[in-house]
Amino acid sequence: MEEICEKIRSLRNQQNLTLKELSEKTGLSVSFLSQVERGTSSLAITSLKKIADALNVPITSFFTSYQNQNFLVKKEEQKAFRIEGSTAEYIRLGGEFSGKVLEPLLVTLDPGQTRDNVFSHPGEEFYYVLEGAVIFNVDGKEYLVKKGDSIHYPSGLPHFWLNPLEQKAKILCVLTPVIF
Image (cartoon, rainbow, N blue to C red; front, side, top):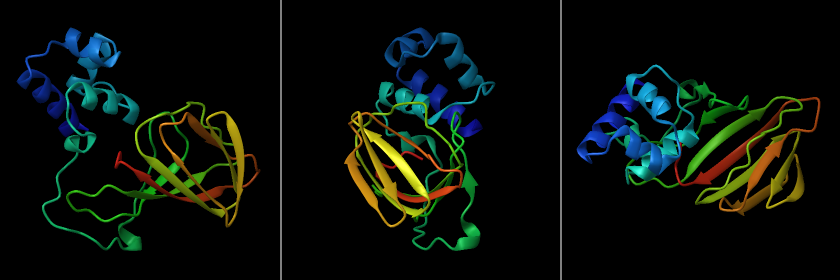
């Protein structure tokens, strides 16, 4: 996180932007942006995307650049993570190399888990349900996706998901662009 905070401050200063100007471009408050740059506030991926867009850089520029190509991801190397504001558990399944555009993930949704935020962003999303069932709401229409079913849609449509069952749901997710 410290590297991301420093990179945000560095890019903002390189572009001669004040915190107020960055606030106006992102819709995020000056005090929040100041806390982010000082490393005293956590940062949701959606906020980081707004900052990246305002600074005219890809969101991936905030993460460590991989010099070596790493195509194989062994099971013991897969680490679970969570995104601020979400109780879903994610495991990155894709290799690391420059120019990659797909982000494959294994996602586990707790029983009854709802994603409260409605998202809309550039790209595509593909999901294959491995266990349980998930309701995907895409552009106001609900789709019940059961084990063995899949759904694929443009991410520009407003969308969210929920796990309606009293058991965990596991889904294979492949999305573009790379955002994690």
